[in-house]
Length: 265
Image (cartoon, rainbow, N blue to C red; front, side, top):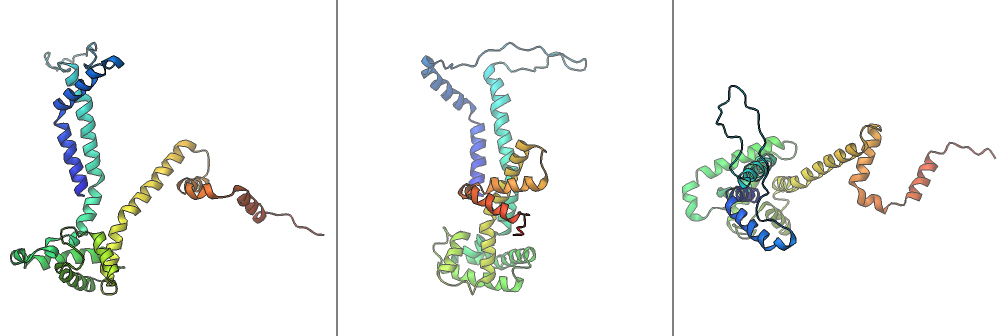
């Protein structure tokens, strides 16, 4: 999520840098004038617009020059759309990350100097996060057992058993537990860490399947049954495996399983 926030900040910074971007583009285009590139916007004839009776006559519907028109109509519009889509797209991911944020709470990685300031709030935050996760994944973990494991894990993390606190992530923590053979002591923690670390893969696989289904439907429209459409979807998704199949053997096997002829002699 830090990378996503950095990306959004860069997009906002890019949006406010129109003047410098335009000057740089003009400089590059002027150096390529021999290849037919123009360093200025082409002037277009201003279209007349019908004015309604309730409108003020001096209302400006067009910008003073082509550069300003491009900035407002194309540059800013494109970046605003991109920023909005990126923000909306990762809202669910941010919600999930906050739900599993007990691995990165200050209470788990704070130093001795910070301990006196947050010694009361830390256990409360920790238990609340554990209760939420235990309710959501009630079939996988038990609340009391999870709280006990996380408290013990907190003590091990303070001793830098799994490496420097600053660079400790959910993946490095999970790998560290397995490398040191501590998974029997942290069964619930390992289950939640595996779930959290595989969420991006499962989401990507689901979106990949949906995208493939949309492509197949677009190409074939409604000219076939749902069963055949789903079969084509599977072949399209697993095209790497499909390329390795011998179609002759598949056809022969299908023909043998569907054979209806009985030899009486």
